[in-house]
Structure formats: C-alpha cells, structure tokens
Amino acid sequence: MLLAALALPTAAHAQPIANPIAVFAGLDKITARLTQFDVYIGETVLFGALEITPRACYNRSASETLQRTSAFIEVDQRSLNGTSQRIFAGWVFADSPALNAVDHAVYDVWLVECKTSSDVPPPEARDSSGQ
Image (cartoon, rainbow, N blue to C red; front, side):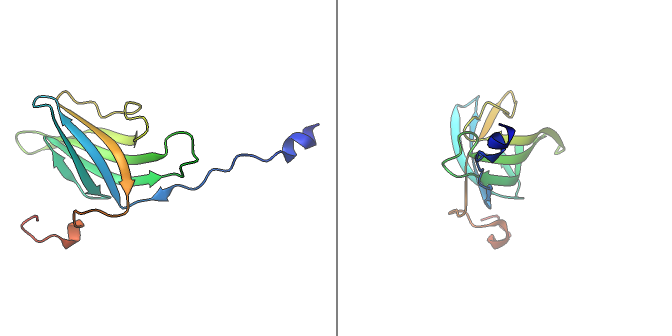
C-alpha cells in the first residue's frame, strides 16, 4: 500500500519567470487620483511621498491556482527634510493585493502585473534631465 502511494504522480509546479518590469497602481486617498506606473527592477520611483523599489517580479503559468504574479518590493516614506524611512519590505501579490499590503494613511500601492517591455525607457537610457 505504501509503495502504491509513493508511485502516484505529484503535481509539478513550473518555475517562476523573472521579469524586468513591475507595474503598480497607486491611489492618493486625499485627491482620489489613481495612477498606474511601470518600474524597472532595481529602480526607485517616487509616488507621492513614497519611494518604491521593486527587487524582483515573477509570473507563473496560467495553470497555477494562486499567486501567479508576485514582486518583492521595498517602500520608503520620504519626509519633508529629505530623509527616508522604510515602511514596507516584502512580497506583494497581484492576485491578492490585500494579502500583504503596503500600509499608509495617504497612499495605497499595489502590484498589477510583471512584464518584459515598457513604453518607459530603462533608467540607463534616459538622459540626465530625467526624460
């Protein structure tokens, strides 16, 4: 009986696919303005007073049942004097944005998707004026 149980096939999980771009949505709760923005892995962008840096962004195949799109991010809050304080570091999930959410009184930020290309040029291709 034990040998029969060991011989049963187990569900194989596909390896996650790393992507160079994380797509986020952000809500400014004061103005009710919703913004969607692309961020390259390792790049830091400013959304309101939040500095958001994705460190990894993964997709899994559509056959996976849960958490097909995930990203590891770091979020710092910038103060008026220019210093920053880390308020979040961890995994966020596009399929369940509330599961491990960035907790902030003014801003909500969540992962939308991971992708391989963007209309936004990579940081190294931008000129010094920031465009």
